[in-house]
Amino acid sequence: MSYAAAAAKGPKQTAEEKRAPAPPQVDITESPSTSSLIDVDSESVRTVPSDFNEQPIKTSTQFERIEHEAEAEEARAKEAARKAKESATKAAKEAKAKANKAAGRFEANSDNPVFIGNAVAVVALSAGLGFGAYRKYAAGELSWKVVGAWTGIVGLFALGDYYLSSYLFKNRYPPKK
Image 1 (cartoon, helix red, strand yellow):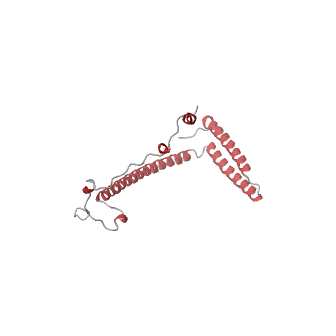
Image 2 (cartoon, helix red, strand yellow; image 1 turned 60 degrees about the vertical axis):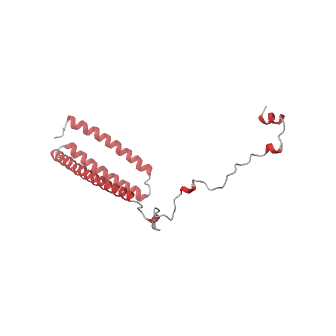
Image 3 (tube, helix red, strand yellow; image 1 turned 120 degrees about the vertical axis):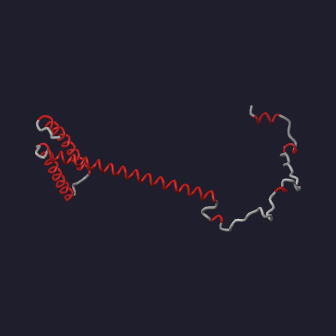
């Protein structure tokens, strides 16, 4: 049985019982709490300039906080610049040393047939691919499918060259250090 059905079986309410209770009434009298309010005519009340809300900094505490944040940000920027300069100098020295090492290795192995063969193969493959791609482009036959196929062929060539060069370096023409 539902609540509505149970309520329907009981006694009927009168019109007065159906009405909501009256809201409480507030007595309007002078209370002691309003007597403690600040008198605006006294000298303890200070006025502010009319453009106070438009001022970017309104209090001395706010000014000090902004000044402190600016000093801290400046110190962080100087530290970051110093670290960046140190790391750039270190990276430049490492790159120069690596380049000198590679140049020395190339000079030491300039008579090695594997080095010479790899250099000739890279130049020939680059020239052949560039010329072939230009011819396909000029004929209007260059598509992503053609580019993908030739990329796969270049990858296979590079893989074969790597293993052949590794074999030759180990067994027949070891590189000079």
